[in-house]
Every structure is written in C-alpha cells, then in structure tokens.
Length: 233
Image (cartoon, rainbow, N blue to C red; front, side, top):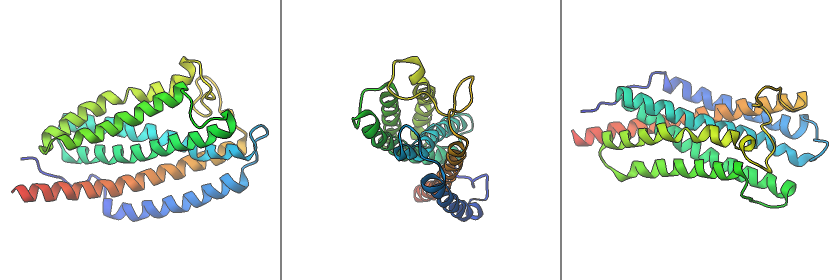
C-alpha cells in the first residue's frame, strides 16, 4: 500500500508568509512597472506589459521544469509527495502559460497589428500549453493512484523537452518575435538599468506568487491523497 508522507518542509508555517511576501513584492513591482520605470523610446508605454509577459514566461518554464523533477522523484522513489508536487506545479504552470499567451497577444496587437500570428515562439508556446493540459487530462483516465502517477510522470519527463524549444525558437527559425531580452547567449540583457531592475523585481514577485500557489495546491493534494487512502482502508 502507498502511504502519504508529510511534506519535507514546514508547509503550515511557510504558506502564510509566502502569501504575504508575494502580495508585498507584487505591490512594489506594480508601482515600479507603472510609475518608476521609464517609458520606452520606441514602443511608448505599451512596452510595460513586458513586466508581466516576461515573468509569466519564466514561470511557465519553471513550473514545467519542476514537473520534470517531481516526475523523476516519483519514478525513483514512489513517494506520493512527488506526485503531489508534480500535479500542483502542472496546474499552476498551465494557469501561468495561458496568461503568458494572453499577455503576448495583448502586446502583439499594438506592435504587430494582430492578436495572433503563426510565429515560432507563439506556436511552440501553444504546443507546450496543450501538452500540459493533456498531462492533466491523462491523470483523470485512471482511478489507480500508482498507475496514474507513473503514466503522468513519464509524460512529465518527456514533455520538458519543449521548454528549450520554446525559448530558442526565435533563434532557430525566422520570427517576428524579438530575441531573448534577458537570457541572451553570450551577451548582456538589452535593457536600460531602471527597466532591468523593474523586470528583476517583477520576476521575483511572480516567482513568489508561484511558490505561494504551489504550497497551497500541494497541501490540498496531500489532503486528497490521505482521504482517498482512508476511504479504501
């Protein structure tokens, strides 16, 4: 029988502080993005969506990389906590990836003149979004906990390959999308210092929001696992 184990960090104590820290940092990031950061000389104020779009892109990568690590953890140890981490990060990742696509479309309209185009970055991101939606749907096809977790873990390990494809698609293929702004191979970020600082704070704020959501979702999933096992006992 598979037994649930306690989370390896003090979830009950950490969760409230994560939420408070996420809110405080988000307020600071919002002020910096809307007021403190200078206006772009070319795009004007519309560029400010970068302070949402780029952090969402980072979190899409982070969330699905965590799914990959958690999937490996389950396959190697069969500890239910890893499965809880995987599904929690996948759900939060799908949320942020959907927001990433929407934010990109909002930015595309005034800069490209269209809400959507078959640009390599947009297409590969949409594929990544659908892969992880499929990952979540796969988990609903079996009521057997171990079988469901193992099947999902295999997909979680394979699907991570799309992360570098999404990020590097603008370098590998002809693209309307600008080149990477921060993670540039062999070069420094192409941002004004104030813009870069604001973007950094925004990334930290969104990352804290991710971990706050993640901690809450892991707690919910572990409770669900316990109830399921108790019902079958």
